[in-house]
Length: 88
Image 1 (tube, helix red, strand yellow):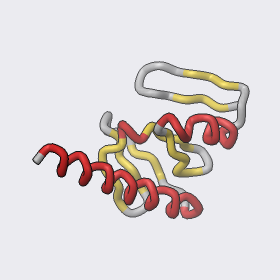
Image 2 (cartoon, helix red, strand yellow):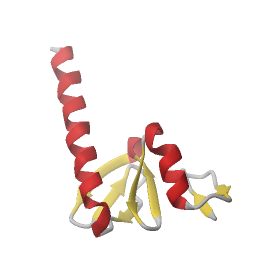
Image 3 (tube, one colour):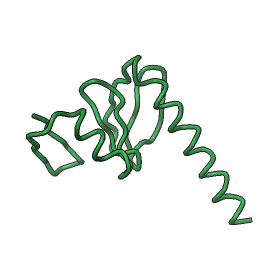
Image 4 (cartoon, helix red, strand yellow):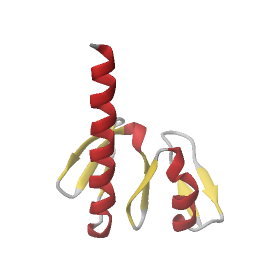
């Protein structure tokens, strides 16, 4: 079973987090720890081994999820650069 806390709303699911991870990947969610799946639109900062969300919550980053986090950061950085170029 999994419990999701997107800010103040609580969602319960009978699915395992790994299954939710697969279902929500295309919706902007990213698995960053064996216990955590985050909505990337609320990611404020990344520091060594820890994420901060825009509401101030911190989430640990598991070693086995570092590669996917770095891939997300690289992709997000490219999207931001493209948007900036379009604005100029």
